[in-house]
Length: 328
Image 1 (cartoon, rainbow, N blue to C red):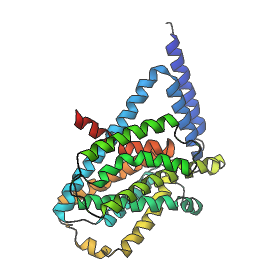
Image 2: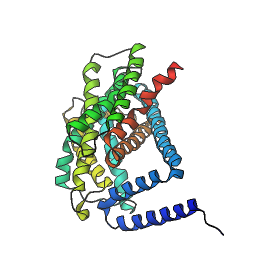
Image 3: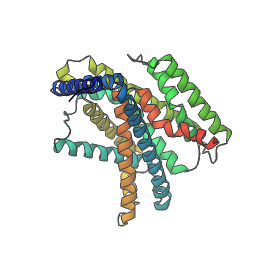
């Protein structure tokens, strides 16, 4: 049986990938090397380029559908059960994420190191920004389910993230042509949305909207900055993606727990307002928390493994593209 050149290249690529996997998985700190090697191999193989593009498109579509479903469930759950408590919902989502990660660790599906104080201190700014941004976003959903200033701000997330990437001096800032294309598409999307008018804008949105945008982009960029700092450590002491994300969640639980304790709507008041005897209440609440957990994990992993700009584009892709489809 004759072996064609394409089949030979495929066999060599598979052997190289198996070798990279066996050598890099010996140390949890080498996950970035394995990812970079896989990306280079996939990109260099011409036959696999359509597959890579299809996978990227699939991830974006899944994220957009998940985000839309979560917004839909929240628009039903919050007004129907009169449960507009953004701090409590954000805190519960972080607790569910921590519980799920620890469950995966207990089942030996994910290796997690114990909480590192030094890593936690480096991730504290990102955790503070992410916690406040989550509360502000949940507040917007509890306040109004219609088109508002928060929706207008989402397409600007990639632009602000590019600005913070240069401000924090990332090792691999976005290329100039990528920045230009992002600026044109995001700016056009914002102009189209603004030209149609915004309904039912709450006055506080003029403060909370831009603040949430800045905090979200700063959180993503800071995550990438910490990831770059970890690459300078010895391989045996490098933190993996799950270690960084786990530390981020622990920091967020402290920040949100403190915010909830200091908030006028104290924990005992929020818990007493819940309709715990209603199964639909549990279903809606669980759907919001689980979907939020998955979406937050995807964005954080993309920021750590790829770039903060890619994470910002993943989060805002639906809001950027939607105005163009409405013109058709």
